[in-house]
Length: 309
Image (cartoon, rainbow, N blue to C red; front, side, top):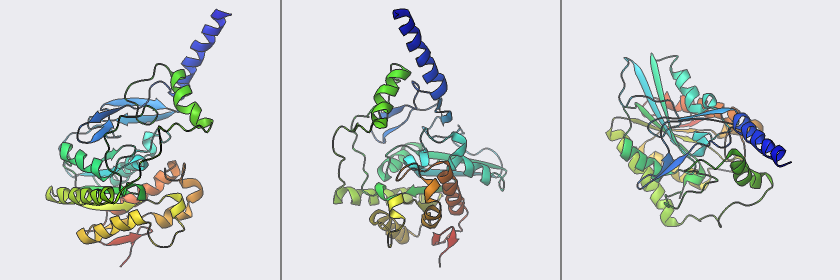
Protein backbone atom coordinates (compact mmCIF):
# COMPACT_ATOMS: atom_id res chain seq x y z
CA UNK A 1 0.00 0.00 0.00
CA UNK A 2 2.83 2.39 0.84
CA UNK A 3 4.39 1.75 -2.55
CA UNK A 4 1.08 2.36 -4.32
CA UNK A 5 0.61 5.57 -2.36
CA UNK A 6 4.09 6.75 -3.30
CA UNK A 7 3.45 5.93 -6.95
CA UNK A 8 0.16 7.86 -6.81
CA UNK A 9 1.89 10.90 -5.29
CA UNK A 10 4.68 10.83 -7.87
CA UNK A 11 2.20 10.41 -10.72
CA UNK A 12 0.08 13.31 -9.47
CA UNK A 13 3.19 15.46 -9.09
CA UNK A 14 4.26 14.74 -12.66
CA UNK A 15 0.79 15.45 -14.01
CA UNK A 16 0.53 18.70 -12.04
CA UNK A 17 3.87 19.86 -13.42
CA UNK A 18 3.40 18.71 -17.00
CA UNK A 19 -0.29 19.45 -17.34
CA UNK A 20 -0.71 22.60 -15.25
CA UNK A 21 2.79 23.99 -14.89
CA UNK A 22 2.52 23.98 -11.11
CA UNK A 23 5.79 23.95 -9.21
CA UNK A 24 7.41 26.46 -11.57
CA UNK A 25 5.73 29.85 -11.11
CA UNK A 26 7.07 33.15 -12.47
CA UNK A 27 9.36 34.46 -9.73
CA UNK A 28 9.83 37.92 -8.29
CA UNK A 29 12.77 39.56 -6.56
CA UNK A 30 12.85 42.41 -4.08
CA UNK A 31 14.56 45.65 -5.04
CA UNK A 32 15.63 48.54 -2.78
CA UNK A 33 14.31 51.22 -5.17
CA UNK A 34 11.68 49.57 -7.39
CA UNK A 35 10.22 47.55 -4.45
CA UNK A 36 10.12 44.33 -6.49
CA UNK A 37 10.15 43.15 -10.09
CA UNK A 38 10.06 39.92 -12.05
CA UNK A 39 13.33 38.00 -11.97
CA UNK A 40 15.08 38.39 -15.33
CA UNK A 41 15.36 35.70 -17.99
CA UNK A 42 12.47 33.36 -17.19
CA UNK A 43 10.56 31.02 -19.50
CA UNK A 44 7.81 29.01 -17.84
CA UNK A 45 4.51 27.45 -18.84
CA UNK A 46 1.53 27.76 -16.52
CA UNK A 47 -1.95 26.35 -17.16
CA UNK A 48 -0.90 25.77 -20.76
CA UNK A 49 0.16 29.41 -21.21
CA UNK A 50 3.64 30.66 -22.03
CA UNK A 51 5.16 33.23 -19.67
CA UNK A 52 8.39 34.91 -20.83
CA UNK A 53 10.48 37.46 -18.90
CA UNK A 54 13.42 39.23 -20.51
CA UNK A 55 16.68 40.61 -19.11
CA UNK A 56 14.94 43.81 -17.93
CA UNK A 57 12.28 42.00 -15.87
CA UNK A 58 9.63 42.74 -18.52
CA UNK A 59 7.08 40.17 -19.61
CA UNK A 60 8.43 40.43 -23.16
CA UNK A 61 10.95 38.76 -25.40
CA UNK A 62 14.48 40.07 -25.03
CA UNK A 63 15.74 43.04 -27.04
CA UNK A 64 18.85 45.21 -27.13
CA UNK A 65 19.02 48.45 -25.13
CA UNK A 66 19.39 50.50 -28.33
CA UNK A 67 17.48 50.26 -31.58
CA UNK A 68 19.54 48.61 -34.28
CA UNK A 69 17.33 48.05 -37.31
CA UNK A 70 16.53 50.93 -39.67
CA UNK A 71 13.00 52.15 -39.18
CA UNK A 72 12.52 50.29 -35.88
CA UNK A 73 9.67 51.57 -33.76
CA UNK A 74 9.88 50.99 -30.03
CA UNK A 75 7.12 51.36 -27.40
CA UNK A 76 7.24 50.76 -23.64
CA UNK A 77 3.92 50.02 -21.92
CA UNK A 78 3.86 50.68 -18.16
CA UNK A 79 1.21 49.12 -15.95
CA UNK A 80 0.27 46.65 -13.26
CA UNK A 81 -1.30 43.17 -13.34
CA UNK A 82 -3.76 44.32 -16.02
CA UNK A 83 -0.89 44.84 -18.47
CA UNK A 84 1.20 41.94 -17.14
CA UNK A 85 -1.75 39.63 -17.77
CA UNK A 86 -0.77 36.91 -15.30
CA UNK A 87 -0.51 33.22 -15.99
CA UNK A 88 -4.12 33.04 -17.17
CA UNK A 89 -3.17 34.83 -20.39
CA UNK A 90 -0.75 33.29 -22.86
CA UNK A 91 2.24 35.37 -23.92
CA UNK A 92 0.94 35.65 -27.47
CA UNK A 93 -2.45 37.02 -26.34
CA UNK A 94 -0.98 39.85 -24.27
CA UNK A 95 -1.95 43.27 -25.56
CA UNK A 96 1.73 44.24 -25.71
CA UNK A 97 2.54 41.24 -27.92
CA UNK A 98 -0.42 41.95 -30.17
CA UNK A 99 0.63 45.61 -30.38
CA UNK A 100 4.12 44.55 -31.51
CA UNK A 101 2.63 42.47 -34.32
CA UNK A 102 0.23 45.21 -35.42
CA UNK A 103 2.86 47.95 -35.35
CA UNK A 104 5.12 45.65 -37.35
CA UNK A 105 2.64 45.81 -40.22
CA UNK A 106 3.46 49.49 -40.74
CA UNK A 107 7.06 49.58 -39.46
CA UNK A 108 9.97 47.51 -40.68
CA UNK A 109 10.62 46.37 -37.09
CA UNK A 110 8.55 46.94 -33.95
CA UNK A 111 9.63 46.34 -30.36
CA UNK A 112 7.19 46.56 -27.43
CA UNK A 113 8.24 46.21 -23.78
CA UNK A 114 5.73 45.07 -21.13
CA UNK A 115 6.89 47.08 -18.09
CA UNK A 116 4.36 45.71 -15.61
CA UNK A 117 4.05 43.61 -12.48
CA UNK A 118 1.28 42.70 -10.07
CA UNK A 119 0.32 45.63 -7.80
CA UNK A 120 2.71 48.11 -9.34
CA UNK A 121 1.79 51.78 -9.35
CA UNK A 122 3.32 55.14 -10.35
CA UNK A 123 6.11 54.88 -7.77
CA UNK A 124 7.23 51.53 -9.16
CA UNK A 125 7.11 52.76 -12.78
CA UNK A 126 9.16 55.82 -11.88
CA UNK A 127 11.78 53.80 -10.02
CA UNK A 128 11.96 51.34 -12.92
CA UNK A 129 12.56 54.18 -15.39
CA UNK A 130 15.26 55.61 -13.15
CA UNK A 131 17.00 52.23 -13.14
CA UNK A 132 16.66 51.18 -16.79
CA UNK A 133 15.78 54.39 -18.61
CA UNK A 134 13.43 54.23 -21.59
CA UNK A 135 15.61 51.89 -23.70
CA UNK A 136 15.53 54.06 -26.82
CA UNK A 137 11.72 54.02 -26.96
CA UNK A 138 9.80 56.38 -29.21
CA UNK A 139 6.64 56.21 -27.09
CA UNK A 140 5.75 55.36 -23.49
CA UNK A 141 2.14 54.34 -22.87
CA UNK A 142 0.99 54.30 -19.24
CA UNK A 143 -2.06 52.14 -18.52
CA UNK A 144 -3.84 53.22 -15.33
CA UNK A 145 -6.88 52.14 -13.36
CA UNK A 146 -8.44 53.67 -10.28
CA UNK A 147 -6.54 51.36 -7.93
CA UNK A 148 -3.26 52.97 -9.01
CA UNK A 149 -4.30 56.23 -7.37
CA UNK A 150 -2.65 56.15 -3.96
CA UNK A 151 -0.78 52.91 -4.68
CA UNK A 152 2.71 53.58 -3.31
CA UNK A 153 5.58 51.15 -2.68
CA UNK A 154 5.58 49.73 0.86
CA UNK A 155 8.65 47.45 0.61
CA UNK A 156 6.82 44.82 2.66
CA UNK A 157 8.03 41.21 2.43
CA UNK A 158 6.84 39.46 -0.70
CA UNK A 159 3.92 37.10 -0.23
CA UNK A 160 4.52 33.64 -1.72
CA UNK A 161 0.89 33.32 -2.85
CA UNK A 162 1.05 36.51 -4.96
CA UNK A 163 4.75 37.29 -5.56
CA UNK A 164 6.74 34.06 -5.05
CA UNK A 165 10.49 34.58 -4.88
CA UNK A 166 11.50 30.91 -4.61
CA UNK A 167 10.17 27.80 -6.38
CA UNK A 168 7.74 25.82 -4.20
CA UNK A 169 8.82 22.50 -2.75
CA UNK A 170 6.67 20.69 -5.29
CA UNK A 171 3.75 21.16 -7.64
CA UNK A 172 1.45 19.50 -5.11
CA UNK A 173 2.60 21.79 -2.32
CA UNK A 174 1.99 24.83 -4.50
CA UNK A 175 -1.47 23.59 -5.48
CA UNK A 176 -2.40 22.89 -1.87
CA UNK A 177 -1.07 26.15 -0.41
CA UNK A 178 -1.62 28.67 -3.19
CA UNK A 179 -4.65 27.56 -5.20
CA UNK A 180 -6.71 25.20 -3.03
CA UNK A 181 -7.54 27.86 -0.37
CA UNK A 182 -8.72 30.25 -3.09
CA UNK A 183 -10.80 27.47 -4.69
CA UNK A 184 -12.40 26.76 -1.30
CA UNK A 185 -13.08 30.45 -0.74
CA UNK A 186 -10.66 30.75 2.17
CA UNK A 187 -9.04 34.12 2.84
CA UNK A 188 -5.27 33.94 2.34
CA UNK A 189 -4.54 37.55 3.22
CA UNK A 190 -2.33 38.30 6.17
CA UNK A 191 -4.62 41.09 7.36
CA UNK A 192 -6.83 43.95 6.17
CA UNK A 193 -5.71 45.72 3.02
CA UNK A 194 -3.76 48.91 3.62
CA UNK A 195 -5.92 51.97 3.05
CA UNK A 196 -4.44 54.74 0.91
CA UNK A 197 -3.98 58.09 2.60
CA UNK A 198 -4.13 61.60 1.18
CA UNK A 199 -0.32 61.59 1.29
CA UNK A 200 -0.27 58.35 -0.74
CA UNK A 201 -2.58 59.79 -3.36
CA UNK A 202 -0.52 62.96 -3.63
CA UNK A 203 2.66 60.88 -3.93
CA UNK A 204 1.23 58.78 -6.75
CA UNK A 205 0.40 61.93 -8.71
CA UNK A 206 3.89 63.37 -8.11
CA UNK A 207 5.47 60.11 -9.24
CA UNK A 208 3.38 59.99 -12.41
CA UNK A 209 4.20 63.63 -13.17
CA UNK A 210 7.93 62.97 -12.71
CA UNK A 211 7.71 59.93 -14.99
CA UNK A 212 6.09 62.07 -17.69
CA UNK A 213 8.80 64.73 -17.35
CA UNK A 214 11.58 62.11 -17.41
CA UNK A 215 10.23 60.53 -20.56
CA UNK A 216 9.92 63.84 -22.38
CA UNK A 217 13.44 64.84 -21.42
CA UNK A 218 14.57 61.57 -23.00
CA UNK A 219 12.71 62.47 -26.20
CA UNK A 220 9.90 59.96 -25.58
CA UNK A 221 6.26 60.73 -26.38
CA UNK A 222 3.90 59.93 -23.49
CA UNK A 223 0.35 58.63 -23.77
CA UNK A 224 -2.08 57.40 -21.11
CA UNK A 225 -4.76 54.69 -21.35
CA UNK A 226 -7.64 54.51 -18.85
CA UNK A 227 -8.80 51.01 -17.92
CA UNK A 228 -12.03 50.65 -15.92
CA UNK A 229 -12.93 48.15 -13.26
CA UNK A 230 -16.12 46.32 -14.15
CA UNK A 231 -18.21 47.97 -11.42
CA UNK A 232 -17.12 51.43 -12.65
CA UNK A 233 -18.45 51.05 -16.18
CA UNK A 234 -21.94 52.40 -15.49
CA UNK A 235 -21.03 55.20 -13.11
CA UNK A 236 -21.61 58.84 -13.96
CA UNK A 237 -18.40 60.63 -14.78
CA UNK A 238 -14.89 59.43 -14.06
CA UNK A 239 -14.04 57.44 -10.91
CA UNK A 240 -11.94 59.46 -8.45
CA UNK A 241 -8.62 57.87 -9.35
CA UNK A 242 -9.04 58.18 -13.11
CA UNK A 243 -10.30 61.71 -12.68
CA UNK A 244 -7.16 62.66 -10.77
CA UNK A 245 -4.94 61.11 -13.44
CA UNK A 246 -6.97 62.82 -16.16
CA UNK A 247 -6.50 66.24 -14.57
CA UNK A 248 -2.77 65.61 -14.34
CA UNK A 249 -2.65 64.65 -18.02
CA UNK A 250 -4.50 67.84 -18.96
CA UNK A 251 -1.95 69.85 -16.99
CA UNK A 252 0.97 68.13 -18.77
CA UNK A 253 -0.85 67.91 -22.13
CA UNK A 254 -0.66 64.11 -22.27
CA UNK A 255 -3.20 62.56 -24.66
CA UNK A 256 -5.53 60.03 -23.01
CA UNK A 257 -7.34 57.02 -24.45
CA UNK A 258 -10.40 55.79 -22.56
CA UNK A 259 -11.41 52.12 -22.70
CA UNK A 260 -14.76 52.70 -21.05
CA UNK A 261 -17.05 52.36 -24.07
CA UNK A 262 -15.24 49.30 -25.44
CA UNK A 263 -15.13 47.59 -22.05
CA UNK A 264 -18.77 48.40 -21.38
CA UNK A 265 -19.85 46.77 -24.66
CA UNK A 266 -17.76 43.64 -23.97
CA UNK A 267 -18.12 43.42 -20.19
CA UNK A 268 -19.45 39.85 -20.28
CA UNK A 269 -16.31 38.49 -21.93
CA UNK A 270 -13.60 41.10 -21.27
CA UNK A 271 -12.96 40.43 -17.56
CA UNK A 272 -11.52 37.55 -15.56
CA UNK A 273 -12.74 39.22 -12.36
CA UNK A 274 -13.63 42.78 -11.41
CA UNK A 275 -10.43 44.29 -12.81
CA UNK A 276 -8.24 41.81 -14.72
CA UNK A 277 -8.69 41.26 -18.43
CA UNK A 278 -9.42 37.98 -20.16
CA UNK A 279 -7.74 37.21 -23.49
CA UNK A 280 -10.72 38.94 -25.13
CA UNK A 281 -10.15 41.92 -22.85
CA UNK A 282 -6.49 41.96 -23.87
CA UNK A 283 -7.74 42.36 -27.45
CA UNK A 284 -9.56 45.53 -26.36
CA UNK A 285 -6.44 46.76 -24.61
CA UNK A 286 -4.51 46.14 -27.84
CA UNK A 287 -6.90 48.46 -29.69
CA UNK A 288 -6.45 51.11 -27.01
CA UNK A 289 -2.65 50.82 -27.07
CA UNK A 290 -2.61 51.07 -30.86
CA UNK A 291 -4.83 54.14 -30.74
CA UNK A 292 -2.52 55.70 -28.14
CA UNK A 293 0.64 54.82 -30.05
CA UNK A 294 -0.71 56.41 -33.23
CA UNK A 295 -2.02 59.61 -31.67
CA UNK A 296 -0.45 62.74 -33.16
CA UNK A 297 1.50 65.08 -30.93
CA UNK A 298 -0.82 67.54 -29.23
CA UNK A 299 -3.81 65.16 -29.31
CA UNK A 300 -6.27 65.44 -26.47
CA UNK A 301 -8.57 62.88 -24.91
CA UNK A 302 -9.92 59.92 -26.83
CA UNK A 303 -13.27 58.18 -26.36
CA UNK A 304 -13.99 54.77 -27.90
CA UNK A 305 -10.70 55.18 -29.75
CA UNK A 306 -11.91 58.28 -31.61
CA UNK A 307 -10.78 61.82 -30.92
CA UNK A 308 -12.90 63.92 -28.60
CA UNK A 309 -12.48 67.60 -29.46
